Image (cartoon, rainbow, N blue to C red):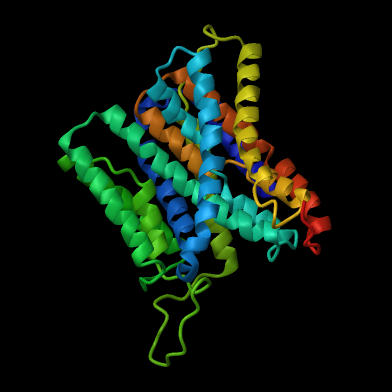
Length: 374
């Protein structure tokens, strides 16, 4: 819980700094540092991605449910933007992607700490949360094409994205390179540097989300695929201690949340009153979470209504990936007010993360030893 409070505080602090100070002069530096933090986070998401290739078909239904649970909040918020603000449909649907992905890291940590690491809720949320992060990345593709125009290099970007996705599946957790939080930072720096060089020389903007996820997905993870008994095999890297893991991880994720808030454009309160602004933020938060409640109507033959409701609520928390989406929208100089409302809604959802997870845990715990169905 203290971690969620810290992240929430840093995001709010960043928002306040964006409104009080003029940070435009340091835009490039902030963008680079934020990109490195985002790359680190996505490498970690890919590294923890678990897929049993022997039963790929069984994931089909989970992917459909994850897609709908990601798409409905996106659609609800996008339609809200179109109807209540003077923005075109492309802008509305680009910004609306912020509502799609669930914050997997905080969710998994809290469920595991509550003793639900082997429960149906944890296993199902683990699959769905990673899938809806993946869906959010895919949703960005057509809208980035719309904003950059249908230029020849766009087709190259699409082909490269296809190759990256193919590589992530084909070579899942098979590349033996050093791993650990310190190495993820170095890989993140490398990805950002390469991305910036490629963008300047070829005008191809692939972003860091998908390349970073792909790298994390192909890196060998001994926790997901224990090594075979081979006396000639040597681990390429001695992992840091748990304390080092936590310090590096929390520093980077905390910095990212602050930088996301600091990247927020100044809100013009002459356009909108404080009371109206609060109403919009609340409405967006409700709509984004209402879309996740679709999962309550799924898995009816597997578990009770308590587990299904717990799963829906467990998918409410938003975080790093949604913030990364808003950074992309800011980079395209879309409607400032719409982006501001989205960041504030994301901040409110992050503040409420502890409440959401506690509700999910309380719903799931009584049924944890029961396999009753609805």
